[in-house]
Length: 413
Image (cartoon, rainbow, N blue to C red; front, top):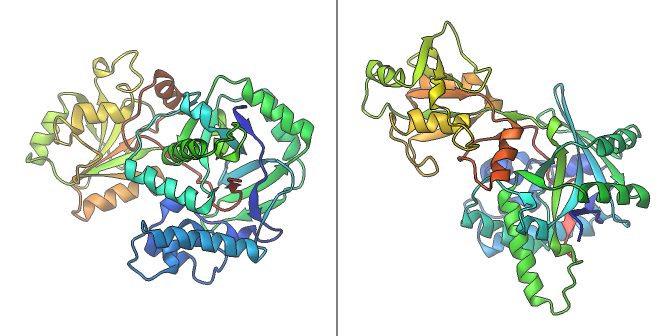
């Protein structure tokens, strides 16, 4: 079995990609999705969030919802909105957001290599979210949400990508958020073979985003293998839908924190406590960190620059030396009393795409007492954590731009 392989993608027929493409299923709630599909009969949200086609208030985790998704998928196939490619293909996929450009490959990635940690993880998963994705894949008999993978860039793949993307794209659409999505199918056997062999020579791939989808693919594969007395390892359920980008093109934004209260402290005593571990400097305006070990803090209409004491940065510990860990271990937990950020309702997280004004808004409204702006986690830090077999704290990375759902799906024959 190879690390990745080409597959016969299920995707929008000619001139239908713009009608079908949708945001990832997990970035919209049901109400937002209902609003998005108004006047959009063929939006992929009818498949990825099928509760929007049932009564408002429908529990999205009922059998009826999963069945509706399968019904909607079949309807789009029967209506010739989605069609299956005839030849196994890879699909070069380019995302453009403002001046940022990244070009990756849509491929089927090996479940066996995920299970053996050749496709490396950096996050824990939640059983309820895994269960949801297992039921989704089983009912649709297809993987429709790609796992976002990355690899240490390769000059060979760069050269192939440059050659392919110099030709006219088959799909070129711009989403509502201004992100451009461009697709080049590649079915030439020689190119497919070269890509497969080049990836197979790599030590590993890394999950950037999609831990629940990849874990679900592993569970579905195990279940189907156990039920198949003629299992060979070549079945499509042994692979999962992925989009793989080189590490030097990835964009990770800051993932910031807001806290509801000062844990019983007044502003002056809180600042005194913070100053024991950080150099605290009031700034004239908003402060966005420009290196590791720096943090912005906003409280009571005032921005501060925080610089952690260098002696508090552990050496040779890829997790504890992350900025998200340094802030949690030296301020958020010991001073503000938030020890379990996964469950504590006093903390919330704000993606960097929203900017520092969103932090000010959350504090100025009185909803939150203090906000922290972080320097973005680097991709090499993510890889170091994954290589060490550890996991990152929750909400450590915010990847942009987001992949679109619906452009290519992987059917489990």
